[in-house]
Amino acid sequence: MSTDRLETDANDDDADLARLGYRHELKRTLGSFSTFAISFGTISVLAGVFTAFGLGYAFAGPPVFWVWLVVFAFQLCVALVFAELAGYFPLAGSTYQWAKQIATPGWGWAAGWLYITALFAGQASLGSAIQQVLTSVSAGFEFFGNQVPGIFDANFAKNSLILGVIMYVLTTLMNVFGVKVLTRIANAIVLLEFAGLIMAVIVMLLHITNSPAVLMNSLGVGAGHSWGLFGALLIGAFLPLFTFFGFDNAASMAEETEEPRKRGPRGLLRAYIASGILGAVLLFVSMLAIPKLTDPNVAGLGLSYVVNAVTGSVASKILLVDVAIALFGAAAAGQALLTRLMFGMARDNQLPFASALSRVSPRTGVPVAATLVAGVVPVLIMLIGLGNTKLFQAVVSIALILVYLAYLCVTVPTLRKRLKGWPAIETAPSGSVNLGKWGLPLNVIAVVWGATMAVNLGWPRAEFFGDAWYQQYVACFMIPTVAVVGLAYYWLRVRGKQHVLTEHSAAPAPVPANEP
Image 1 (tube, rainbow, N blue to C red):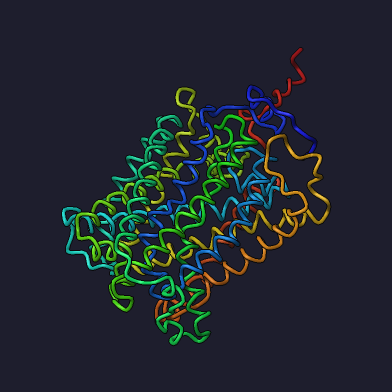
Image 2: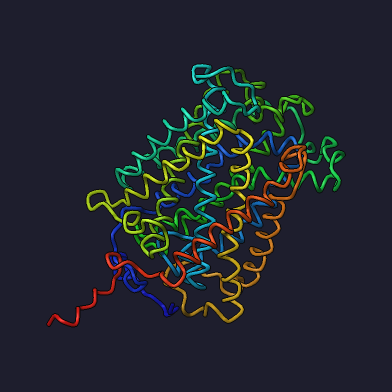
């Protein structure tokens, strides 16, 4: 792929896409705020902090605030590498397209396969998350049994499935009706999420009981770990790690964005940076407001318990409703990301039923079949929980590892390309993010960080995965399984057959020899 400078105007986006080999089919309607909102909504910092706060606090105590800052800083290196790639290759499919364009179709397949698998499992986990939040708002959402916080049993799985089906029916309708409908709702949800974040921060500030010195109080959490406090902090890092992904969604919708080489990368970075800063502020004030640091309910029930303890149930329920709305927005945005990823791979003939999955509705400008699959598969994964709750938890637990492996499939070949001199500064697309001389060191950090966190997330730990050996080594079993299945399909059905389907190609179809 040539890296010649591409001078593009706002009215020349389709011609720019044609230079990359594709015919424009999706509708360009996204502006600057919408590209920001779609990534910010996918990250969903309010939902991430509220639902995972107990996990981080249980294992790392108040110093989880510092862990958040460390993870934010290192993951920013990944975001910067992605932003630069988004400027060079403004194509639907983000990680898949970047790996393919910067390296080979094989690298693209690996990135796409791992990311699709991860997003399916991650979307399924949102059904469990919204069940946990809504049943805390009202017992009316408990259709089976009585929810015990932190306990995933058969009744929890049944409730999750019902609420998950309702949620994905609604998000599928939002996505099928077109990107205008999706972004209008996403924009509104983001504004509500901002309001919820502001409300949560104000509530905490009005009920400060601890000094900032509390952030250095580990509460002795490292005593039970073989690596001491450092080992505890590594698990505490799961809180920000569970939050800081999906920020590439702004770039994944590049073919629906006006001036995508400029707005896609900037929307990605703005969403990531805003999420990191707002999440840090919320964590900071929350630590200052916890009435009793050693209260086991802080770790067991999370931030909703803290809000309820300092203000009462009304404010807590209002915030939980906002968290549920944010989770719904994350599900809708995540489904959009999955749809564009499948569309991007299918039009290159890299998925089963490629023609159907890549077909775009001329009325709504949406790949309808891909959207339906993106809504149905997470529900099917949730069905696993009905028969085997531990298996469902295992499937969901490896989703984030797969995300980091998919990201490595982008950052590793990009680093290899940089070592060969890519990109020349003078070839940077006009208006895009250009890392310049910082590109190489940032890329090195992104690779080392990604590999380290993939190992950290999958490391066998009794305190996180469970006491049984097969629970602790679940990642060691399931990650190779996903890799082998993907490799087998690639080798048997994809390798050597990758090409842009004729109906999606910018090049005119060849004229048969027997025609004039």
